[in-house]
Amino acid sequence: MKQSFKAAVVAGVAFAGAVSAAEQKAVEDYAHVPMPAGVQVVVSELEGPVFADAQGKTLYSWPQRAMRVGFSGDPKGKSTCGDTPTTKTAGMMSPWPAGMDLPEVDKRLSCAATWPPLLAPEGAKPVGAWTVITRPDGKKQWAYDQLPVYTSILDKAPGVANGGSGTLESGGSGTQPARIPVGPPLNAPPGFKVATTVAGRMLTNDRDYSIYTWDKDPAGKSICTGECARTWHPVLAPAAAQPQGEWTIIQRAPGERQWAFRKKPVYTYAQDLRRESIAGDEMPGWHNVYTQRGPAHPAGFTTQMALTGDVLADAHGKTIYYYTCGDDSLDQMACDTMDSPQVYRIAIAGGANWDRALKMWPYVPAPANAKAPSQVWSIVTVDPRTGHEAQVNQPGALRVWAYRGRPVYTYADDKEPGDIEGNGMGEWQGKRNGFRAFYTKELFGRRGG
Image (tube, rainbow, N blue to C red):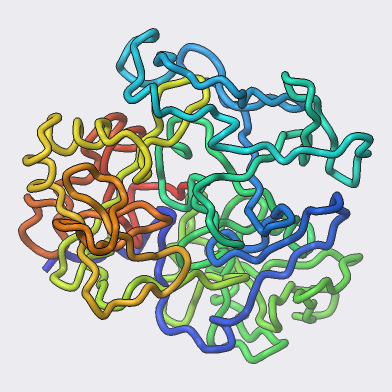
């Protein structure tokens, strides 16, 4: 049997052990900030509190990023997401050169049709961190922290955030500008941040190192002293600090105060030698801290030990993979959805041969009696001959599992539980266009999203 690793970094997915009912129901506290009329805060299952429009649709920004041959995304104070569909490759990151025809151009939507801008009414004035910019067509658009905001046509219900790069290390977060859900600040003292993982919204310090609690600490008191405190460093509160929201301060010793979250003292781990490490969570009695737990994965799924960490697997132990893709155009639209041209996926999965692609990368079927456990995991009906969504009773259609609206797969050449032979297949180790194993803990990866 393959050995699990004690040191692991967050790969965007990290399922925890047993969680109390109270902890599972807890939601993230956020700072109540000024918002324009029509903008609200919705607590999503995956991304925590997010800004949403009047219909509850998640709002996103698209921060500009330097690419291989230029820039893509929005600079501050300006929208580059226009109303004219792009028809040619941009040569930004793909091995393909600029100027090649994009597939299915006759069906291609413009960036603004895929990412509708949140328009501001005439005469709208700045509100807090919200400002108003002028789009190229002269219309007014809301911006948050100077970045224009949009909704996504992939989001069908309040609290859904299928449009963003999510928590998995994807093309968006790895090799091209990501659409990022925009939300209010965490209601926490200075020095703390929160990172989105599938296990939940994980607390870190402002240097991206994990925050931990200890089972042996009673509420409102730390008994981690001496040698314990040399390994588990108490997160100390400054002399002038005051309790804030769910954060309180305990007295460790005269003149020494320590932060506590939900009455539990918090620490960092001396053996976390790199950012985003969660090595301390492997130590008995010590746990990462979550402001909000993530949604459950489907019943029947398992976790398996692989050579590079732990992976999500189906009921038979076969590793589950997600497919990620961003097309090489100036608007950098996703091409990993069921509505996207499927030529990108079939090129990687089967060398442009549909039969080979279906054989090598079969969908993960959902049993007839299966129910989706959350908005993040769903059951979709797909036509395997087109890759597009199908009618429920359509002949040959398959009922399959999907993560954030995108079907997931197994790989034919994985023979034993924990095999990850398909991991990284595609461009840029599968990060820009290809397949990635659905890690729960990955030794050599990094947190996406």
